[in-house]
Image (cartoon, rainbow, N blue to C red; front, side, top):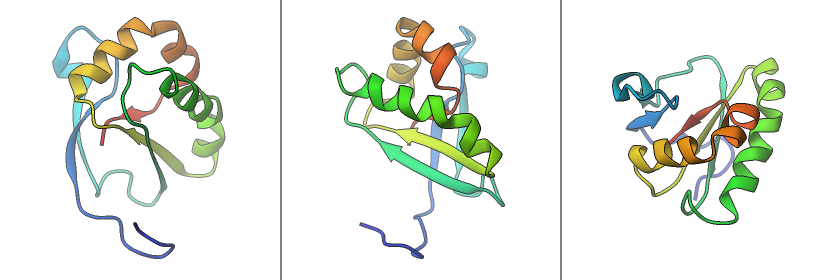
Amino acid sequence: MLGVGEKFPDYSVTATVSIDKDLNKAFKTITDQDYAGKWKVYFFWPKDFTFVCPTEIAAFGKLNKEFLDRDAQILGGSTDSEFVHHAWRSVRRTLWIRKASFVLRM
């Protein structure tokens, strides 16, 4: 577990950035170098298709604009693949469009 002031590990992952049917647009590789100069807020959950996850994702989504106004980027992730994130967003489209407009997958 990292503490305050410790460096987050280097990473390169495929993130789900939209619900576009063209997977070349829906997915994007992100690294620890993305969002330079911004605070990064990482949060994690166990799996997309569980009863807890939608509430956590929606809660961060509701606050996304406030984070952006403070130069902070929300990055959410779970053990699911980018394909599962894409499927979850497609099934939970109303929740996604209204609440969570940030990057999913770590």
